Image 1 (cartoon, rainbow, N blue to C red):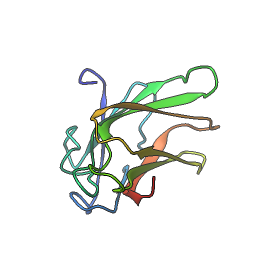
Image 2 (cartoon, rainbow, N blue to C red):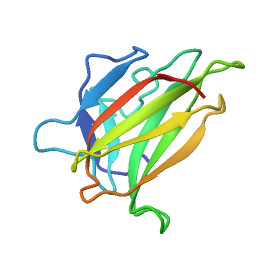
Image 3 (tube, rainbow, N blue to C red):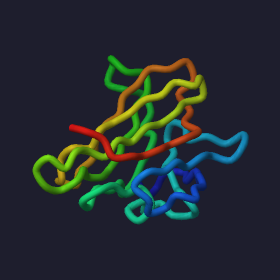
Length: 132
């Protein structure tokens, strides 16, 4: 993910279990971009959840797998421990559509968030604890 163009969002919620980061006006995360928040591409101290849940990195990898028109790669992990729920990551695209991914497993790995939209450019990302 490190060789992609970086698009910087901002948040006042870094390190909080519920938060939102937004792109500056006229800027969005698009195909081939990597997300930065408050100047950092290492999101592990910014997008966090309960019981060690976190997101390390987000990149827009472009076209989906044939079923979805767009795809985000989200590297991270859900909360540790039985019954600890999930970390829900939600993005809002340029058409106003909302798309989410639940991180349930406490194994840190790359997850795909495929979605369809008339305008797949991402302008908002939020996170919060969720149920499994």
